[in-house]
Image 1: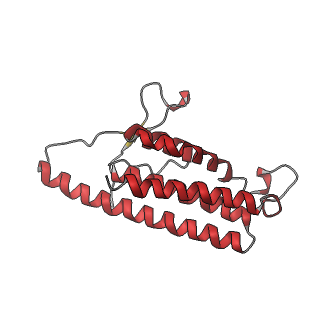
Image 2: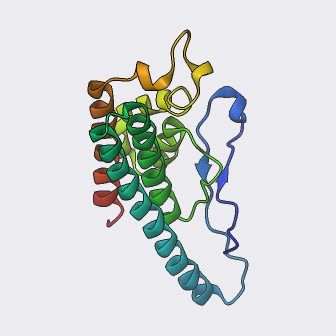
Image 3: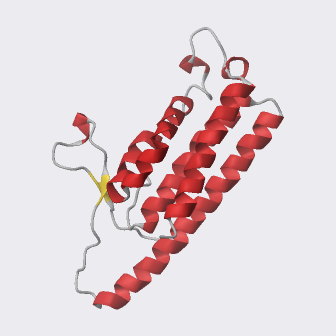
Length: 172
């Protein structure tokens, strides 16, 4: 499905650490409201797909933790939060596909709903995006031996809070 560019860099650019925020839908005069309605339905469907995968990623995190693969549980939790936040942005008409930072996605969501500040602590999940998978992300250790059950449980809790938040505010 072809998507419009929906995430732009505000004046000052990304170099200053500013969040990338969704841009407004352009009304190009192409059949006006009918096109907007069709786009809205497509955005709802895309948002639903991303939220469904976020739920599956959280389940995979629980399965990995139960198997003692805590590094994967941490990474899958980060992925669950990332996908849930992208779901919300799709619902709002943005195209956040190239963003992978939970912190940046949270900031973009907060531009639309300031309440997202309530789950800002989930930005912590960004620490589990790379070092959980690559030995060179950890000094003198390997991911499988480094991460603990407690850390995996904390990551799952953060991801769960993001998913629940998106489920609550995605409906309103």
